[in-house]
Image (cartoon, rainbow, N blue to C red):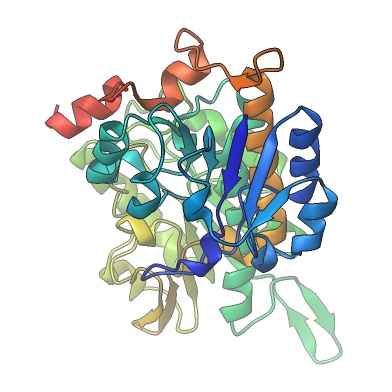
Length: 384
């Protein structure tokens, strides 16, 4: 099987330069041992701390220009979506793997289908026990939670832990985390390690025990029946529930030195959780980190890709959080893809077995044989 990895770092978009690489030298070595012919565009790992020599030592072949290789490859491994010029050069039946962002990139998905490519969107990998080792969305979200907390601490004009000094005692900073999914739980754990007093809220009462096991307090709000999807995501709230939630959270937000919002809905725009009016209740110098800023935002006044100030509060919406720890982000993502390939790679035929009867591929393969085959996507595109 011929596999290609592009240097996504040299193709920047309006919001960031990609620092991660889809394959690490460690993952490359294991792929090559399986008989996979791995081609990596020169410089692909530089921004994540890996030299060309690291990949050569792992058995990969470095190429300077991928245009000639694209028509021959069987699989393209990406961090993000492939660029249109890459898609146009690929042969029918080739496989594309990456963060496709399919619900909000209909034109790109249709282009992949029209090119007769099999597209596997890593965001669509189900949150099952068997698929856990392939769950790139969760691995990157965990790093995001860590990075967001450090970003907040760096912008707060105060320390986080309690400190007893000859001139008096400094009280610990108060951190409030909204959303106790993978990113939120890691933010809570990081804040506790730094010595802060932590409170968290999630619409799913089932996660209260996880919050408390990390040393945080769980804010209990009665907004009626809530829950989570079969994949572990929070259910969307009604307008009445949203209003009750925001009213109950207002005091916790006003008292906090740092607020981190991590609320995102699978396949939909994120909910607005904090208004400018609520921001005005916070102490000057307080910090709010909006994890969802790039996809619509949880905080009124946050600007995608920027740090801004609203009523004296620093609002961080820079996004692309795992880029800040690109080496670990590359290692984790590369291992997710390696586990995915190992699960479906047939060493006898040296090919990736696209078995759409398998639960993992049935969820994550979105285009195949010239069509968009994922029912959730088709319903979303049709407005259902």
